[in-house]
Length: 312
Ligand SMILES: *[C@@H]1O[C@H](CO)[C@@H](O)[C@H](O)[C@H]1NC(C)=O
Ligand SMILES: *[C@@H]1O[C@H](CO)[C@@H](O)[C@H](O)[C@H]1NC(C)=O
Ligand SMILES: *[C@@H]1O[C@H](CO)[C@@H](O)[C@H](O)[C@H]1NC(C)=O
Ligand SMILES: *[C@@H]1O[C@H](CO)[C@@H](O)[C@H](O)[C@H]1NC(C)=O
Image (cartoon, rainbow, N blue to C red; front, side, top):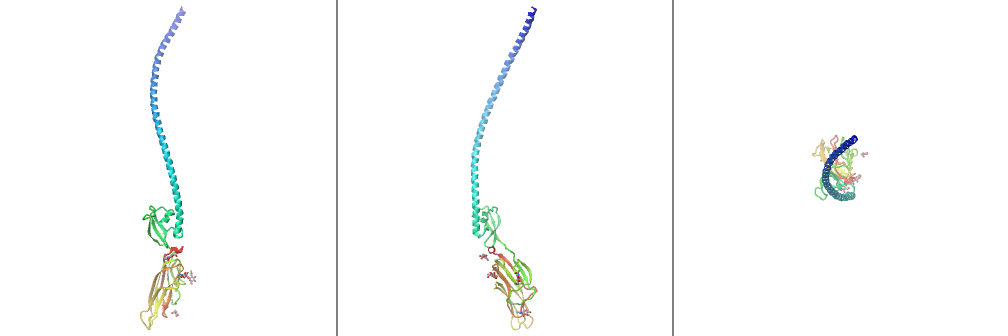
């Protein structure tokens, strides 16, 4: 009996425990189910929102893809146009340089630019002052390469450049009196002889280049006294043996004794060919006359302007 009671108690406790536990479990399950349901609804809501966002993203991506495709097409288009232009420019430059070779050589008979157009053809692009070859001289021109050759102001002439292939000028004197006729007058005092065209020993100047030259001679002649006639002294500038200029010194009064000193001078601007020879000679004089030395007689000459087309 006691055993049974103990068993009963134990069983009762177990049953009670089970019952109370069962009660508690039942309550919490319901609560959790509610929680889970809430969570599920919340998640479902979020999911739907994300779905919308995804849809929007997809649409945006499609739009971007579309744009990319369009840009790619446009890029290919531009690339083709660019390649075409490069080819055109290359062909143009090649043709131009070929033409330049031909026309520059053709115009002047040598490969020297004679104009802004020639300079442009051989590749000059910066506007500015340039030297070009004219027929006989070098010219300075302003080239405005922002203009077309046919436009006014493409080429502006500034002026002729004083270009000489070699400097040529001399100044000589005589220290001794001289009285020989029909021979070139030598000059023993050489003050300057740049270029060496003047041979003071022979008195002969040889033009080194074709061009224009200037010469001047001046001095004093001694004319002896004469009571019967006016006496004279003639001096002449020769080019290759041809008389070019003549200067005279005359006595201006009859006198029984005591000679006179008279001045003479001549100057000349001459167009000479390279190799032409220039000198001074006493062409004729009265007996006893002479040309004074001691630095009284001067001979100058210089190349004014060279004909460059002849010196090449
Ligand atoms: C200058 O002339 C003299 C006389 O004719 C000649 O002997 C001499 O060689 C000439 N000098 C030159 C540099 O030609
Ligand atoms: C002048 O004489 C020089 C020397 O003899 C010669 O070389 C030249 O050709 C002559 N010039 C003319 C124009 O005859
Ligand atoms: C040149 O001068 C010399 C010396 O004074 C003289 O002997 C000669 O006769 C003169 N010649 C001429 C052509 O006058
Ligand atoms: C310059 O030289 C060329 C070629 O020799 C010639 O035709 C022209 O007449 C010359 N000009 C002058 C001013 O000497």
